Each structure stands twice: as structure tokens, then as C-alpha cells.
Image 1 (tube, helix red, strand yellow):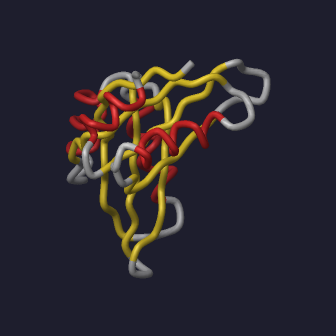
Image 2 (cartoon, rainbow, N blue to C red; image 1 turned 135 degrees about the vertical axis):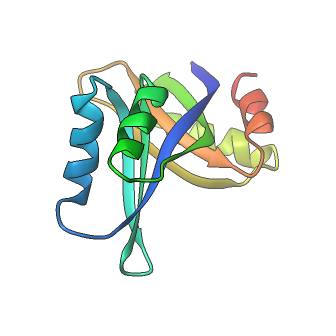
Image 3 (cartoon, rainbow, N blue to C red; image 1 turned 120 degrees about the vertical axis):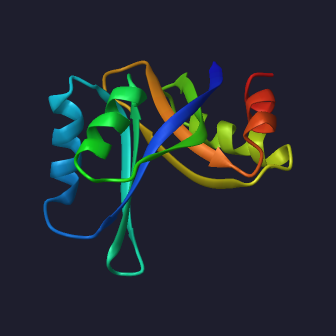
Amino acid sequence: MITAKHCKEVSVRVFNDIGILAQLTRIVADKGVNIRAAAAWVEDGNKGVVRLVTDDNLRAVDALRAHNYAPEEVNSVEVSMEHSPGMLSRVCEKIGNGGVNIQYLYASAPVSDETCLAVLSTDDNDRALVLLNQ
């Protein structure tokens, strides 16, 4: 079973430096905000991007701003699916067969869990939602 819904990620652009990810996640944790999913990568050698799906974006954004970061909320799609072989392929096929391009995706699941979480962004998130929830 696949269930998709709109979500917002907290996105922060940072200078790529040792310990920056630890610092960002500590700031969010100290405000009592739970990070449900995270992705981070480096672009152009010294610029980093951190994306967080949290249980309270308002507090996460406020906390990061208080520490002189410039977070923004980014529209994306949260997908809950059965944790079994081929499920991620089914999600990607549904979106692709519907003519929607996936711009990025990250997923996570505990080995012992029956469901997993994927976060993705497409060139048409509304259409992706319809395709996934059919």
C-alpha cells in the first residue's frame, strides 16, 4: 500500500564545514523538535544543503533563524509505503508513467519495520500525489 501527502521540508543552505550538520540538528533538537527524515549534500564544493522533515517546522525554523541561519520551507511529497522489495520501484514507476519528473528523493526504514518513509520533490507535486494515491 502506498499513501502520499503534501509535506514541507525545512531547507537550509550552509557553508560546508566540519560539524555544521551536528550544529543544525542540535539547534532543532534543543527546541524539542523531532526530525523525522533528513538529507544533506554538498554543491559546488563549499556550499551545503540540509533538508529536514520535522514534527514542528515552525519551531525548527524559528530556532534556526535565532542562530542566524536562513531556513525556508520547501514543498515536497511524503510517501508511506510497505517496507518490501520493489515498493520504491513502484513509487518511481507510478510517477514516471504519469509523466512527472522526480527532482530528488530520499528514503529511510528500520530493518524490522513494516513501513518506510520516502520524501521526494517533483516538477508537479500535485500530480505526483494523485498518481501515488490511485
